[in-house]
Amino acid sequence: MYKALNYWVFGGFGPNRTPYEFIDFAKAQGLDGVELTVGDCLSIDVDEAECRKIAAYAKEKGVGLRTLASGHYGAESLGAADEGERLRAVDFTKKYLQIAAWIGAETILVVPGSTHVTWDPSRPVVPYKTVWENSTKSINELIPLAEKLGVNIALENVWMRFLLSPMEWKLFLDQFKSDRIGMYLDIGNCLIYAPAQDYIELLGSKRIKAVHVKNWKGDDCGGGLHGFGDSLLEGEVDYKAVFAALMKVGYSKTFTAEMIPFSRLPDLVLPDQALAEKTAAELRELCV
Image (tube, rainbow, N blue to C red; front, side, top):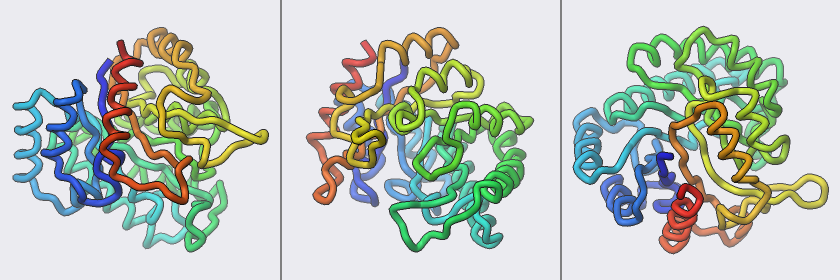
C-alpha cells in the first residue's frame, strides 16, 4: 500500500513549510509520498515551471506526489445556490486540475458541496436538492478538462451535511459518465454514519480513487469534532475489516494520513512536527 502524509499536520493551514521541506520529511520518515495542499504550500497561482521543479525534486528523492488536497471548498462550493459562487468554485477547480497535471498528481480531492458549513456561521444554509443539482452541474462542467488532463476528481466525504450514506454516494457518483469521477474515501469522517468497510463494499475500487486515514470516537450517541484525536490507532476504525474490504475489491491506490486533531480544540496548533512524526510512524505500523 502506498503510504503518504497530508501537508496540514506538517505545515499547518498556510505556507509555513515548502513542498521541498515536506518531501525531505517524508523521505526521512520512510513514507512513499506526500499530499501537497493547494492554498497552503502550493498557491493556486503557482506556475508550470515551479510545479515541474517540485515534481523533479520529488522524483529525485523517490517520494510520490500522487494526490493533492485543498481546504478551499468551505468558502466556495460547487453546489452553491449563488451562481457566482458556483462558477468561482468551478474556476478554482479548473486551476487545481491544471496544477495536478503539471506536478504529476493522478487525483485531486474535491468537496462536492455543502448544505451547512456548521463551523462557519457566515456561510448560507442551502437545500439538499439544490446542492445535488448544482454540484452535479459543476462536476459535469469539469469532466472534459479532467479527461483531457488525465486527472481524477475524487469527491471526499466531509462533514458538510451532504451525501451521508454509502448508497447516496453510489447514486451520486453513478450519474457521471466518466471514469475520472470517483470518491476520496475518508475512513474516519464516515464513522458518524457508517463504517468505512460498508462504503468500500458498496462502491468498490473503480469508484474509490483515494483513501484518507484518520480515526474518530463517537460519544453521547452521536459525537462531534472532538472525536478526531491525535492518533491513527485510537478510535472506532476497524482496520482489519477496512484492509480486508480494500483487498476484496482490489484497491491498491493511495493510503494517506490526514491528521487534524480537533480533540485539542481550543488549543489546537498546527504545524506540529512531533505529531507529524508520530503520525508517520503509526501509518508505517498500519501498513506493514
